[in-house]
View 1 (cartoon, helix red, strand yellow):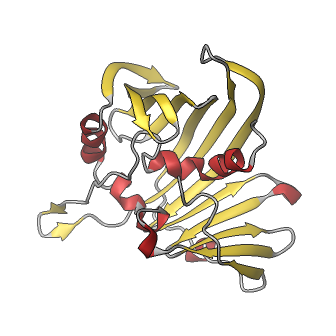
View 2 (cartoon, rainbow, N blue to C red; view 1 turned 90 degrees about the vertical axis):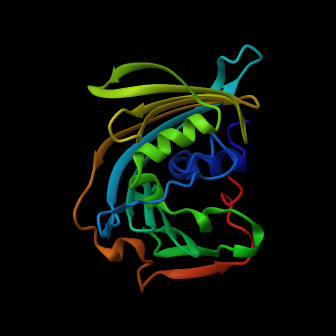
Length: 237
């Protein structure tokens, strides 16, 4: 089950599917940056590592059978994002640079480019990472407004976090539990189950560098890029 293309697409999309609250809700939250005095909040850079374990679940909801693991480095700058997975010849880079998504293979200097269609409803074309980074209070309020309930406070790897749970969040899952930073509202852990699948994801090494090179969000000129007309495999997340 876990080797299906759909599962592989979840693996690739996971850092942003969760960041955009696609696991909690069918559509992304709207947490618009608010003016501070006479100035609006400036775009924020953010980098972090994410790891996930995905496996089949039985009728009792417990993990059964083989599992797949996923590790990635994520960089966000403005409205652009970069996801790096694998190492050596297995390394893959995903670039989100509206209205395009790239999947690059650095060892072969090749890649695929999809163009997101604004006429086909809400997709990652509408995803603005700054909505998640500029207004933590709005993110927390959105969790509650969309059915999640705060069930406790704890520490996770030294970080103060709040625990939220939601039943029937929509999308692929029947239940989700998230550990959200108390001060920054960023995700630190997630457990979700539904449709015979279980996901456990963790985030760590959050950093806010002042500068991230714009070149990291652009396909290198010496790469052979093939345009694909079909929708990207993760656009339905």
